Amino acid sequence: MYLVSALSVVALFAFHACSTEDLVEPSASNTQSEPTEMSGEVIVKFDPAVSDLLDERGLAQTRSNAAATRSGIYSVDEVLDMLGEVQAATPNRTIKRAYRTDRKPIPFPKELLNAPATRAEGENGYVYNDQLLKWEWHMINRGYQDHFTIDPEEDAEVAKAKFQVGADVNCEKAWERTTGDPSIIVAVLDEGIYFRHPDLQYNMWENEGETYGSHKDNDGNGYVGDYYGYDFINNTGIISCDNSADTGHGTHVAGVIAARNNNGIGITSIAGGTEENPGVKIMSCQIFSGNTSSNTVSLARAIKYAADNGAVILQCSWGYTSSTANGYENTPGFATQEEWETNCPLEKASLDYFVHNAGSPNGPIEGGIPVFASGNESAPSAGFPGAADYCVSVNAIAADYTISTFSNYGPGSNISAPGGDQDYYFDYIGSESSDPAYTAARGAVGCVLSTMPPQVSDQTGYGYMEGTSMACPTYRVSPRWVSPTPSSCASTSPPPSSANCSSKALPRSTTTRLGTRTITTM
Image (cartoon, rainbow, N blue to C red; front, side, top):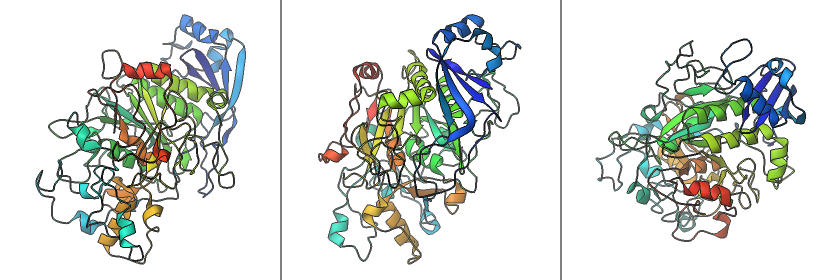
């Protein structure tokens, strides 16, 4: 039995009838379902006065004089003498991904990766010399390019019209002001990140008080060996991404955020900076491994860990299905914020903690920003928690400003950004063509190119994926731009269709908080 710390003003308990964390391994399926409930486990919410009692008795130490963790995990037996009245009890759920594990990435072809090196900076027509930038239409979209091979059965003019100049993240203009700031730490709550990747290794967050692989808690934060982050699935500081069922999803979104720019290899990222001017840092908070997902308690620990260790942005590819999703293919989720908060109090408390406690008045940001993928059910509303007032929910668009065929949109959404849409351009790649240039181009025109672990990218280290998760990283924070509310669309010229615009404004209280921070939306 465990007590999860008083996050904000409530105390939340997780009662475990069997093992401490029974992890569920759902089978792969085309049907999207809601998170399952953990057998024999409930989360109990106590009266707010309980948190005051815990503070009075001392949160830094248990009755047995053992040090409490940074996530405040306590034995229920140690506080039973101080119990207030139970307000509510909810199941301890298995956390649902916002993407499908049966959709595998498309590796970038070795033949193209091993082609002659990219020319020096400026000679390739771009500000950076990264080798694969010309395939990254989501970063810099200059319309149809000759190296985009179109399907022979596709009408050439129609295909070319699907690329509109400027349907990207508008990063060139943003880079004139900032290319990323190392004081910004983004926590990626996803599969583990391949931290040895040559395009990521210099932008990984490092816990300087720890030693990677250590069996001791060297910095005393309650987590052993948490050098690049922590694996909340297996309770270890060893970050993994080599499970046979891993998709590379965490590494892919990390690359979109902060791959090192202008290093002559690989991709260009939103905020990865350069060797001379380093960019943002990536913290790996692993909540998925293969087909195994975290539960609510582990998720809460991950969110609090991120806030306590310096992260100011959460990159979230998890959550509940939209309430307006097709009921034949999905189990619709929560319809209102009140319904979600009532049924998922620990998730709400964790996000509240991050929003109000991440960062510092003397740091780049005061408070934290949770950024969520809006969901991939083609539904006319975003799923929770991303649809909550204090979160940012991101839709996906294709290379011509149209909403991606899979993307959620409408109420609960804040902003749209490039997320790819392979179906909109071509059918999925089969075995009918072995030409690497043809294969790569077909992937490039429909999907987002980014970093990947070797085992899921045919050892190239790069590959294509699509989804609102790919759009999610393009909403980022910079300490040099000020904007009281997020812009409602991915770019400003030409005007996108109404389907791509935001339908949710941040509430006044949140807008005020954001107004004290420095925010970039690209």
